[in-house]
Length: 430
Image: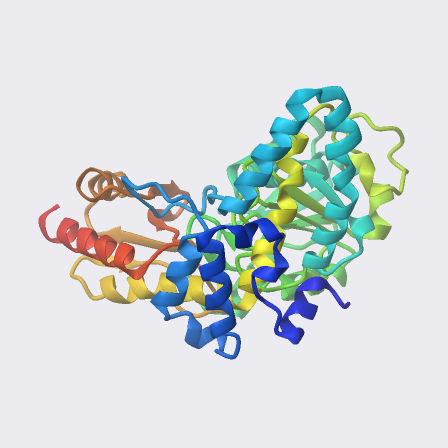
């Protein structure tokens, strides 16, 4: 598929010209445009270590001056152009909401659907706009036709909202949840696949696969698990909350039937934006989460009947896509991988410090987990905040315990040097 991203990459046009002219009206925008032109021929893996270039990217964000944000895995800030577009759409809508919101701003939904589909590598008639990954995934979880005794395979390391939704169906309707308990981190793809396939039975109707385990940054071999599931007529639901726009892939290549993600994480769209992909032939098999006519309707828009919502947030997402295209998917992926490995390499040999995420791109990207022997994750999290003003998050979920560190493209290695210093001091002095 000739989508915009691949076209820009092949044409070598990943410059600020991908954004609207207002970006170039700012000094930081002109500097970033010049920097992008200067590195047009530089390989993404080489550019990943160029702090001068990424400084210009950093200027595209409004960064909190009084702390270092290393919890971008929860929600990421949007670039300035995205935030400005959201504010402009809000100001316009607020002048006459029923007119501007529905007749003007909301008319951008179909172009946005097309642009998201191009980014995802699928047909625009397979994309529904939502507010977050939970809403997208729960649309499928509650919308699938299942009966008592039908089995669903999922893991104990999945996201709590999804687990709670499946447990509700189990309690209300008598479906059976079959649990996989992953030993992570793992660089053994065969082991990861086998944990799922061993749980399949003739009664299995759905398998839920978390593309990247959000607590630890573990990538799972979704395609291999999905291929095995399809041979047994099992529907595949993928939780892509932490993968869409973090690293490069196209949704159909996962061979899944359903895919949900948050756009306010790695795409950098405004807070409260998400996306649902449903394979076209599966749309008629899923009930919409909100009343919207017949289940058999084959129009993807049946999943968007959410009532009045902040259209000004939704419509600023196009600017996030433009910014992502401008930086370049591969450049971003390589930078995020470099930043994760940068700090992990520097703390892995500190006494009592353990890292719990793979250094290899096949099994991880931006997110890393660290722990200190004999200490609670909350202790390290609190120490980093109180003494270094570094914002992280302590994780204790099933067999995963540590502090999650999640940089973004605006993070500098100087920020991470401060993190390394803090972890070292905590490990030594407690």
